[in-house]
Image 1 (cartoon, rainbow, N blue to C red):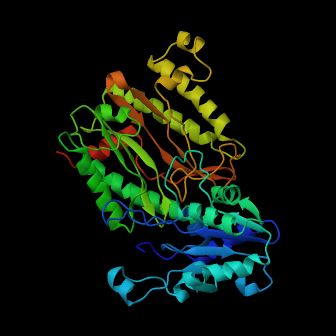
Image 2: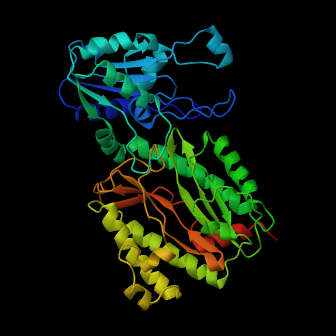
Image 3: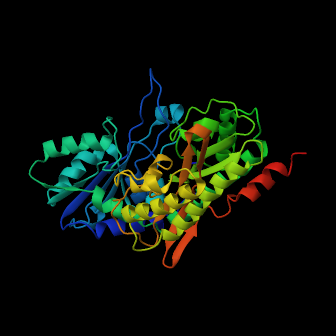
Length: 432
């Protein structure tokens, strides 16, 4: 892979945390993601199953992890199954992992080829009672595509119906919410690559530039810094487009006097950054734009202070809503009558700030976790308030990535310019 080698100690540690949470006489089975098709003989870029990567560091298709920590034969308590290569595969697809490389990456000593999987699983299950299987239980998952893990759930339950089946997701999702030091470092590195992209954008943004041209600038910087590219489909939204929350066409020309909202992040070693910045296309905020910008920044800073141990997303979002309500009152966008008559399930501030403020971040951009989980040190969140005034063609969102610590927080994007004066200075220092 493009990224630098990650110490196998991280994956050994992650497996140990999982094993400590399993019932006695259990086996865990996780498959890698499929290489997904497009049309004809085309395929999408491979993206590894996040749980498999979390536990092994293996970034290759057709890989299977089996953990059986109580199995009598110690050599069979951890097994990694890989795709056996041959000369034809090497010619057409390139290098595939050897058994020794699998050991060095994962720290798992017993590496087998995939053709041995069925027989080895049968042997392990003879001494097992509980089977933990992997499913996508993210609350926003809406995919109709059947994954390799989905297929295996059906196959395994059909072939071995008399076992106790367990959901792996609640355990591994809980473990993944609290990042190890090495994981935070990888997220921060993705943030640093994102910073390089953003600083490039400040140099080239001007009236007449096209949104897709800026997308290309980001892509160039990301790829040149060992990133696989964008962590998610980027939003490069000038003018009214910034009021469309998931605008991804990036096809319009930037106009003098408009604002440009960019929701962009780099991926690095499967970990993700998630940044939003809003800048003036011509390098100078108008008085109105600046007032709204500063209001969003104040909410972001105050919301960041609320990201501390013991809080939880529902209460946190309610508190941020109160902060935004005060700013919208000051801006004259809502009044006290609006608040008095508001629907408690859709408060008045939602007219101009209709999305959540934070989500977990990690191996997935919208990382896995229950929204009711109390905040703990080591969790990483986005913080991203915004104000969207469609009638004025103004959309402003500001977003940083925050690690919760024992005593507060650590802003992983602290070096990415966000204050209006700094942005204006950087945009104009090389222009006439």
